[in-house]
Image (tube, rainbow, N blue to C red; front, side, top):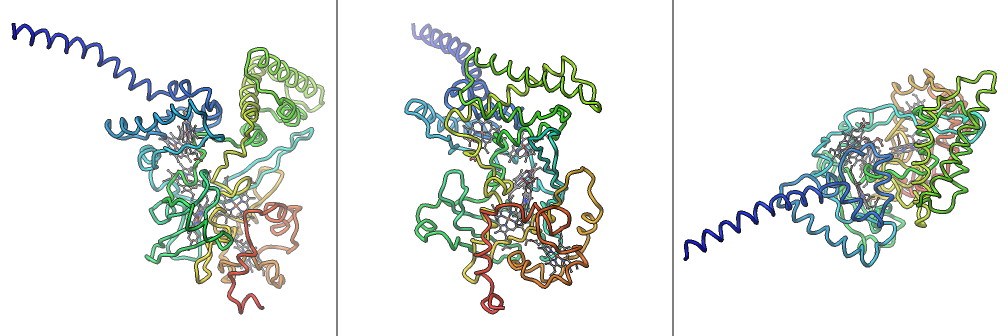
Length: 457
Ligand code: HEC
Ligand code: HEC
Ligand code: HEC
Ligand code: HEC
Ligand code: HEC
Ligand code: HEC
């Protein structure tokens, strides 16, 4: 009787195992899939998966690779249990814009595919913009990025890899970390410096701010979901040749389509209406382009189809994001400083030590003086300047704040004629420097950090 019971028990256990094991494996795999992350939470934040699939270079990297990371089975299981809090947020509603509070630290995600020394050299970057005019005219800004470090000045180069070597802790009080109130940095010689924001209330710095160690995510916060804005998305499509610049007014018309479509494009009829508008714009502009004497051959029907599809995907995602009463500006990127503070969250001039040392703000700390121009070929004077050694006074951390007060006679030897402005005719008449608003840079704070004797000069 007992033997029979044991036998029966074993049979039941084996059957249960045979049934449960595949169910467990399938559920485990399903909860690791993009389909689970996007469909189960689809209604909550569709813009995340749209941007991941459309714009990210990580579109083939699964959501869990960054959000849960690569860990051993039990750690992953535990982490997933933590994510069940999302189910509750789905019931009671998410805050908007959504913030990821449970991202895995870079050493368990990014560094499983990349390396800690991901910025081994200084590289030439070109940012291309297109105007909303007949020729979709282009303007390029060339910058030699000093990602690996500054050429002159310190003996040890402090490049971007140093930022993630465990050397920097920072305190910020907003979830997207766009405001940084305090930074503690350990320099290669072991000196520790504490910088605090001279403009922030002491209560903010000491009270609400949360401490973090700077890792890859502190700058590359948009790698999974870039939201660069409709204008920048079109510029990138023109720059890589996907959108033909030969179609007159193409950028302007597409931007108008975005501006005028204020309703979400969610159902089929709305999509079809939009598709018709896109088709008309492309067809009309192709005809006009062919009528130009110098026009290149028109686009093939197949190419037009591809373009229609691409423009539709782009525009639907831009319009729908806006219909959630948000737009790309709710998702700032921390790797630059033009549309959001990015690097200038720390390199602003406001973060100072008690003895008035600042986190460097001079432009050429991070890249060459920008070269803004219409054509694509880079003039030799720009390249020659890169090999020049900066004079000693330039290495002063406050040089940027005082350079326009200098006697300019000695400058032309290296910089050519000194004529501050923004027509891009010379190094110093430079729209990359003087033709912009610098709301994240605080040169007053830099001047305040000058030694009293110098400031009085
Ligand atoms: C390459 C890494 C990576 C991948 C792949 C990735 N994410 Fe993210 N995700 C991030 C990072 C980094 C943030 C944090 C952004 C911030 O805090 O500023 C984030 C933030 C989010 C947010 C919060 C909103 C926001 O944009 O800040 C949501 C929701 C999200 N991800 C969902 C997803 C989903 C769904 C997928 C898969 C379709 C996915 N992620 C794939 C890296 C990734
Ligand atoms: C599963 C592997 C994988 C993971 C995880 C991953 N990446 Fe990547 N990443 C890649 C690959 C592959 C490329 C090259 C893509 C290409 O060139 O098209 C890339 C490209 C990049 C680039 C250059 C392109 C761009 O988007 O600007 C950056 C920066 C980057 N990764 C940062 C990160 C950061 C930060 C994380 C962690 C949040 C991360 N990656 C996580 C595989 C990964
Ligand atoms: C202090 C800010 C900062 C931190 C921290 C940072 N990066 Fe970067 N990284 C940049 C900038 C700026 C660039 C160049 C501009 C760009 O690609 O957006 C860049 C470029 C890259 C690239 C592309 C290189 C290429 O040749 O195109 C990769 C890959 C990358 N970073 C990975 C990482 C990884 C992995 C980490 C963490 C170990 C990390 N970064 C930490 C700012 C940072
Ligand atoms: C969390 C704060 C923080 C952020 C964000 C940050 N940095 Fe830094 N950075 C520092 C600190 C601190 C130093 C060292 C200051 C010193 O010399 O005392 C530094 C130094 C540097 C240096 C070396 C300067 C030198 O004199 O050798 C470079 C280059 C640099 N940063 C580039 C960048 C770039 C590019 C970004 C944006 C992609 C960035 N940093 C974002 C804090 C930051
Ligand atoms: C702390 C580092 C840092 C400092 C200081 C800095 N930049 Fe930049 N700058 C960057 C990074 C990173 C980018 C992004 C490059 C990219 O996207 O390829 C950038 C981009 C730019 C661009 C091109 C962006 C665009 O959209 O047109 C211009 C122009 C520029 N910087 C000018 C300046 C000037 C002028 C100064 C001095 C007032 C300055 N920068 C100071 C790091 C810095
Ligand atoms: C011996 C050659 C030389 C002389 C003389 C010289 N400069 Fe420079 N200057 C340089 C070099 C090299 C750079 C770095 C260029 C780069 O990296 O693109 C530079 C950079 C600059 C910058 C950018 C600073 C920053 O990082 O924010 C300014 C502003 C500047 N110079 C102004 C002047 C003025 C004003 C004078 C005259 C009082 C002058 N320079 C004289 C060689 C010189």
